[in-house]
Image (cartoon, rainbow, N blue to C red; front, side):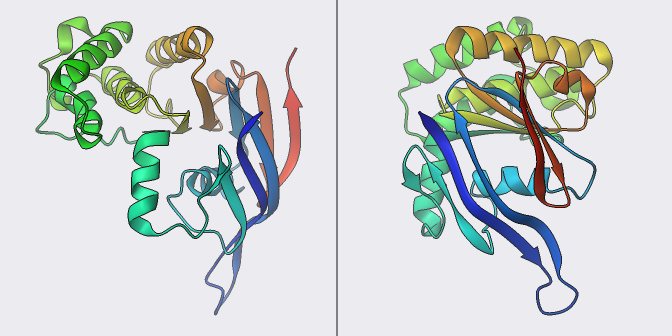
Length: 228
């Protein structure tokens, strides 16, 4: 069963001057447990597609459904709550809160969800340990390497137990060893906990690991290939 469904999704910027068609009539579905990459050159629409799926931007036309719930046109407060409880985000820039420790960064989303202190503690410790950061609970972002910061970001995305994770260029700032370690951990989460991952990337280190590769060109889906 599909957990994500887009229908006729289009996005046009600067419609009143020189229009830029970032997405053109994209209809696609994703199922639970996928480990999928959306690839394409800069300007192909891959990041725009993830932003639409995540409710971070509104389409010009078309709709997005998450687990049967239409998020297109949803009121802002309801959409914020929906994202908080259903979607995990991992960004290229990490977006960690600099004054928080690794433990506090991971716990923060659960605080917003009003989880109990005990559940927050157990989940944050479990995830940071799984990410190989057991000795970094009290370290702030500036005390962590790029790879460690990105692993904290993945742990934070998983903390809310989302239906799926959207990862926009998660390995772009990482050296090969850090990128491979991160991908190993995400594959393990996908395999053992059935966490769904959808990546936007042009990094072949990610593309080679994906079981489904969607290629975008000029705002449209050019290819949709499944491996194995």
